[in-house]
Length: 202
Image 1 (cartoon, rainbow, N blue to C red):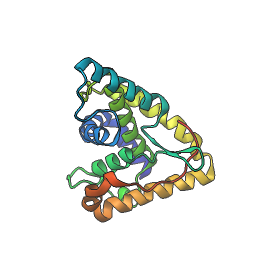
Image 2: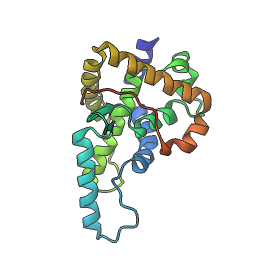
Image 3: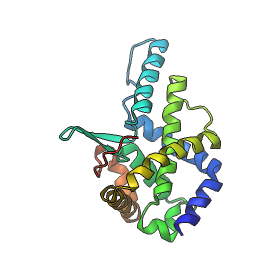
Image 4: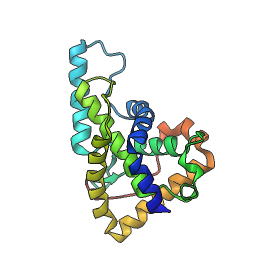
C-alpha cells in the first residue's frame, strides 16, 4: 500500500504540486519571519529584506527545522509549517483528501511528507526569487529535484534505527491529529508544535 500511494503521488506530481502550492503559500507566509508587517521601508528595501530572509531559510534548511537551544542541535522535519501543510492537505474535508485512504488513517508515509517538504522548499525559493509573497509557477520537474534531494537526506536518517523510529512515531502522531480533530488543531496550529529530535542536517 505504501509503494502504491508513493507511486501515485509521484505520477500525479504536477497536480499535487499545484494544489500543495495553494495550501503552502499562506502557511509559509504565516510561519516564517520573512515579511515585515506594517513596514515603512521602500518597495526595493522590502524586496531586499524578503530575498535575504528567504535565502537564509533556504540555504540553512531552517524552513524544515527547529533549533534545540538546550543541546545545540536541530530538530529536523518538525517545523510548524511542514506539519500544518501536511495536515491541511492530507486531512482536510476535501473529497480528494488522502485521509480517505486506509494508509493515511494511521500514518503519513515518509515520501508523502517529503512531497510537502519539496513544495515548501519551492515556495521559499519563490519568495527568494521575487522578493515578494508572489511565487512563480512551480513545475513538476522543480518539485522532483527538491524531492530527490530531500529524499537523500532522509534516507541517511532512516539508517539510524532510533531516528527511524522517532520519525515514524512523529508521522503516526500527525496522522492521529489529522484523523482525530483537524479543525480544532488548525485553529490553534500557530501557537505550538509537537517535535521529535533528529540530528541529521539537511
